[in-house]
Length: 131
Image 1: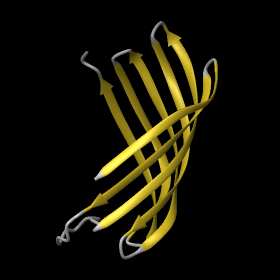
Image 2: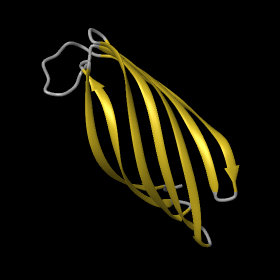
Image 3: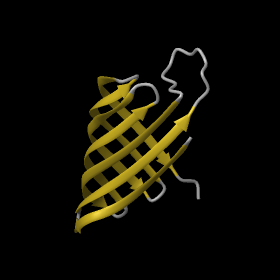
């Protein structure tokens, strides 16, 4: 497996900004009988665009709101390639330089074994830096 990404700010003004991220990934797996998605070989190229707004609360605390949309081109050995997409909205509460709490929801179309699958998702994360 190999992957990489590149992020670039497109426009920034005070509390608002837009950025884009380009991601690429590839993997090779052994043929084994499993009950989960395990392609022999696949590649993915994704372009994401995000609009963000930061609301300062007090001192070092703030709320970051993000609306993100992306499109990707996915190829899987034996099944060809197809397009996918994702749309999500999230909140990130930055409580200190070392602590933040985030959550969000979204909808996506992913490609598995050549077939598009639609799904809704929710997520949450806690980021705590010790240094």
